[in-house]
Image 1 (cartoon, rainbow, N blue to C red):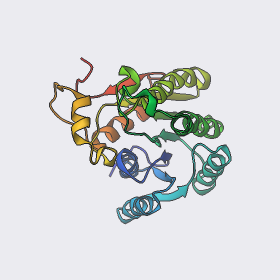
Image 2: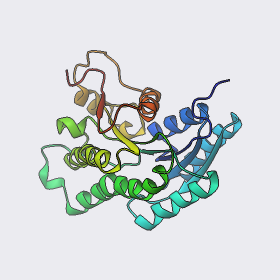
Image 3: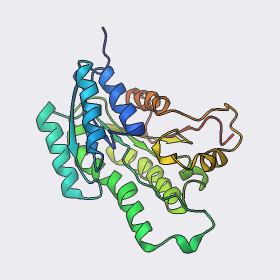
Image 4: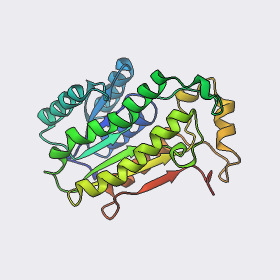
Amino acid sequence: MNQPLSNKTAIVTGGGTGIGQAVSLLLAQQGAAVVVVYSRSENEAMQTVGKIRDDGGQAIAVQASVENERSVQAMVETAVKTYGGLDYLVNNAAITRQLRLDDLAAITQDIWDELLAVNVRGTFNCCKAAAPHLKSRPDAAIVNIGSIAGETGYGSSLPYAVSKSAVHGMTRSLARALAPDVRVNCLAPGAVDTRWWQGNEDKMRALSGNLPLQRISTPEDIAQLVLMLLQAKSMTGQIVRAENGQTL
């Protein structure tokens, strides 16, 4: 069976759950060796690796805190040592807080620091550590997982929306900084049916509004678009919206 990603290696941060898990499974199905990076979800990451291996694919799980530069450097070095190089990086690791958008008093310095550290600095740390290895491989690519909240300013919380807007801007800057060797694009999903929204389903539907496609995306929907962006040789610096028509 033809596997378009044979002999490719991919790092997927937050790769054990939700969108990251779906991306990890799909890339492995396409023939890539996948480094499933987790922060706290060790059991889920190991289950993801186990499923990939049971299906005949290659995968390892690596713990890393993306906000910590040394931890990220060690993670990338493990990936390169294990599989001999690096072709793709999917920056999916992120956190949020469910806060009312108009309740500015609830937004503490600690919340700002935590979300910006993981969502923004963590994304940069991974790109910085991976860049030298990606540059040495043909058709290398980075996909950052942003959010439609970064485009609209409307999401699970104000700091989350701002952090994802920063990821969108970083994508454009990195696309320039790493060209012509590495393509850098960003996928901005709308509401996705993951554990982030468990207990907040009404809020998820309210934020999504009256969607023209009348559906909420699945993690597998988003994974298909990540695969597309990794292979899109004529695209860089783009923010691709995947929101079922929410912003029409």
